[in-house]
Structure formats: structure tokens, C-alpha cells
Amino acid sequence: MNNIYVGWDSREDIAYQVCEHSILRRTYREFVNVIPLKQNDLREQKLYWREVDKLASTEFTFTRFLIPHLNGYKGLAVFCDSDMVFLTDAHNLFQNGYRDESKAVWVVKHDYNPPEGLKMDGQLQLQYPRKNWSSFMIFNCEHPSCRNLDLETVNSQTGAYLHRFEWCDDSEIGELGCEWNWLVGHYAEPTDGTPKVLHYTEGGPWFENMRDCEYDHVWKKEVINLYSS
Image 1 (tube, rainbow, N blue to C red):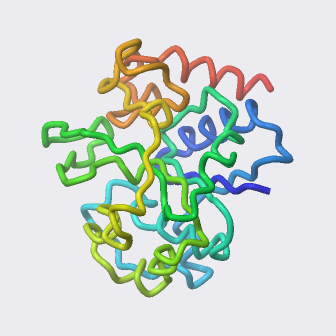
Image 2: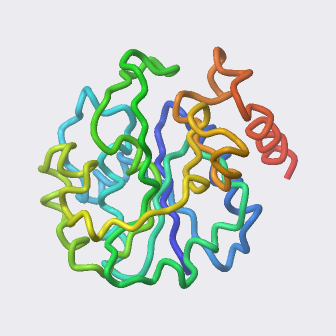
């Protein structure tokens, strides 16, 4: 069984539900297991004890880096933010193309620098190197560098160390095509290709003031399918 860990935030449960549904309705359930990263559960399990960071935009800002540990430092494991919709079979992420033992992690290496201000959910929009690289990751949990993401490190190291991938060498970061983390409003069809995973990073249709955003019809259709299934 292949694990896909999805960030979960108590303020945006509907986003998680839609993301999970989009994965499972396009992928045979015997191939993937979708796991919500719930901070409170991880705290109860004594796996997460960081103090609440006022600059953390979601409840899973740091918990995503627990995934190699949660996966027993074995095999591949995928992480994605909850504000995503899969348009393709997620099992493709676990195929031979991502078996390069020299890589610790694969990401879309965005060149993404939105203006600072407030996001649609009222959270601060901060600029930092490698922004949104960590919003979708395939971990090679057996790689020695993933061992750097032990419980003590994840609970004590800075956000810069974690999100800028200072825990591994740059040569160990594999590259995914932007279709796997299609930043809505940043990439455009057909210039940049065709999305396989939509990422409503600036806010999606579950926010009142984003009901008519780009690709809003895709998310709304997924909601209808969720509640009719």
C-alpha cells in the first residue's frame, strides 16, 4: 500500500474532503492509502510538540516533515496540501520514475514570488526562497537524508531549515513537472502544459470571495461528486 499524506486544517476541512475524494475516485483504493495529517492527533501521539507558530499559515506547516518517520523510513510517500484537486491517477506517483535512490525528495521547483500581503483566508503571504516547493513532495523515505527529519529535528529546527530543504543536499532534490503542482493563477495552459494536480494556493472556491476563481468549476464539480457518491 502506498501512502499519500494530506495536510488537514480544522479551518478548511472541506478542502481536505475534496482533495481526498479527488484522489480516491481516480485511483484504485487497493493502491493508495490517504492519511490526513492532523496536528492534534500527532500531539496526542507525542510525535509533535512544537509551540504554535503565529507565522505558520496552516496547522500542517511543519507536520509534513514528519512523513519519513510516519512511513517508518521505508518506501515512497507523497505529501500534498489540502487545497489541491487531483485530475489523474495518483498511483502514477509511485511508479519506477521515482525510484532513483540518489534522490531524497522530488518537488516542483517553482519560481514563484507573489506580492506580500494577505491571502484569501486572511493569512500572511510571505516571500521566501523555494516557496511552495514543499506543498507537494514525494519522499524517498529510505534515503539517508530523510533520516535528518527525525522527531527532534522536526520539532526544533527553523522553518527555513525545513522548507528550504536544508536537511538534504541540493543534488538530492529531484524535479517534478509543474503539472503535478499546478499553481492556479501562476501557470497557464497550454504554455506550461496541462495540470494533473490543481493547487489553489491563493485561495479556492470554498472561500466566499474566491467562488469564481480560475478552475473554480473543477473544484465545484468535485464537491458535487463528493456529496452524490
